[in-house]
Structure formats: C-alpha cells, structure tokens
Amino acid sequence: KGDLFTFSTAADRLAVGNSGETLVADSSTATGLRYNPLSTTNFCINGGFDFWQRGTSSSTNAVYLADRWYQVSSGTTTHSQQTDVPTGIGVQYSVRWLTGAASSYGQWFQALESALVKTLRNQVVTVSGYFKTAGSYAADLTFRCRYSNSTDTLTSVSTNITGASVAFAGSSVTSYTRQSFTFTVPSDAVGLTIELVPSAAQASGVSVFMTGVQMELGSTATAFKRAGGTLAGELAACQRYYYRQTGDATILEPLFGIGMAYSTTNTIFPIKHPITMRVAATSVDFSTLQLTDFVTSTAVTSLTLSSAMNNPTTAAIVPVVASGLTQYRPYELRGANSASAHLGFSAEL
Image (tube, rainbow, N blue to C red; front, side, top):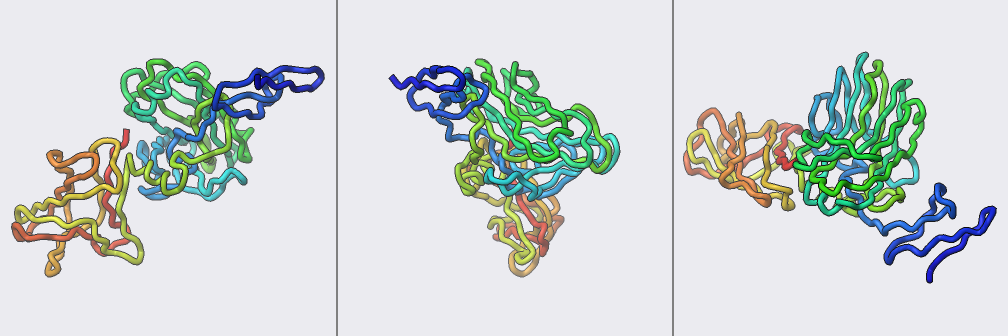
C-alpha cells in the first residue's frame, strides 16, 4: 500500500514512507525521489541574519555580533551585515567577513543548547547554507557540526562527528552556492555547534558571505525557513539569549527603567525582560547612560547585575555614579543624549 513505481530506463519501486513523511525530489536515489520526515522547524536561530541587536559591524575578535552568531577573527578582519543575498530563498541579509590585511580570516559559530540537542539524539539531520566568496579567495572552507557529550558551552564543543561536514574550495563559490551535509546526532550529545571555518588565512580584500543557514530533521535540505516561523517569532528566539534596549538618532534620552537610590552613589533598578530568557542573565552591557530626578542628571560610571534578584524573567541592575544622589529618592535611568545609548542582557552559551 502506497508504494510508487518510477521509470527512467527501467521500472523502479519506491517503498512507501513512514506516516507523516513527505515526498521530495532527490537526484541521488535510483527513483529520483525520497520520503523525508516532515520538517517545519529550523533549529538554527537567525539563519537568515535578520537581527543584529548588538550592531551591524565589528572587527573585534571572539564576540557575538549578529544574534546567536559568535565571530572569531585573525589579523585584521571586519564582520558585517550585507544585503548581498541569493535570490528566491526568502532572506534579506547575509553576514560577511572582509580581510583588511594579509594573513587574515574569520570564522562563525552557533551553539545549540542542551535542552534542544538532547531531543535530536539518534536522529538524522541535514544542515545547509548558502555561501559566496569575493576577492580571489584561494583556500578551502569547511561547513560543519561538532559536539560535546558533557556541556553545551560554546568554547567546549569540539568533538568531530562522522559525516557532519562538507569542505569546498572558496574559488568554486564566487556566486551563491548551497552546501549541505547529513549526519546522525550522537546518542550522547549534550552540546552541538554549527560552524564555518577556513583552511588558511587570506590576503587583504578577500570576502566570505553566508546566509540561509538551516538545520532540519531528515536527509534532504528543504527550502529555507526561519526558526521562529515569522520575523516576530525569530526575534523572540534571539531574545531568549540576548536582548538590548537602545536609543536612536531621534530619541537620544530613551527611558530604560525607574529605580531608587540606596546611597549617594548606588541605585537599584528592576528590569522586566520582554520574554523569558534561557537562564538568568549572566552579563549586562551598557553605554552612555545617566540617572535623573528631573532636577539633576548624573552620568552612570558602572553598572552590574544584582545576583540576588536575577532570574530568567527579571533582572535587577545596580547603576553607579561618582556622587550626588539623594538616598531613597526615585530616579530614572535614561540615555545620556546619545544615539549610542543602550542596555543589553546576555544569557548566551
């Protein structure tokens, strides 16, 4: 029941798939068809590079830039948001590394948390992405997954997986080309990463672009889809790990919160997260903030998390000023007349 017969130069039989699977074209099979698990989920968050809460360009080594993507640089390398994308796959941005000096390169990594990885154990997954080079790229690129059987911390995931990689010459992808590989997630996997790494450093002016990155169930790469389904859902998925409140060129003193001074230099502010984060925020970053009681405004010199009042839904922060606050008076935390004013919380791996 449900078997199919095809014909090329001879009749061939394709046995019916499992309940819920879909029929997809696959030129590598004898029948040209394959049953594939119905995959409506992309386990790679922000694979279309829609969200860049931290900014759209950076040459700093070993930091997150595009949401969920950790960048590594050697030499002089700038990572940035680009609008150069493949047509017809439903993405608007790509990420690019550009070498600014000889013997430079970039790398990109995304770590998947253990709560997800454990649900993928022993399952066949396919990872795919679109890649392009410019400026006479002269080395190979490896698109791969690695895993850990003990932790999902990004820097600790380092064990290779049989079949979980594809290597290709940079010179072969001067226009966007989709690369993919299929593997079985190890039965003891706790952490898993998606990575793009080069085989060698390059000369100045060489670029690598990446977009449309996807990890899905099954042995065939299907059309790109967002992890959150919609742009709103994708943003929420990103904010589970990091979110930032910012100012802009028209609102130079955005309101970040209302709190109280408990000394002449220290204040406490409760901050409600827009969604529940992966864990309680582990770090906070900020720029050009001030405290005001509507009479006097004072620059914030440092800002830390209050660990005693920190959980996945709410954080408490302690902005500090040099002097001049009135104890037990309420204050507003605002941008200090700057478009770069921001307050960010991280629960990254």
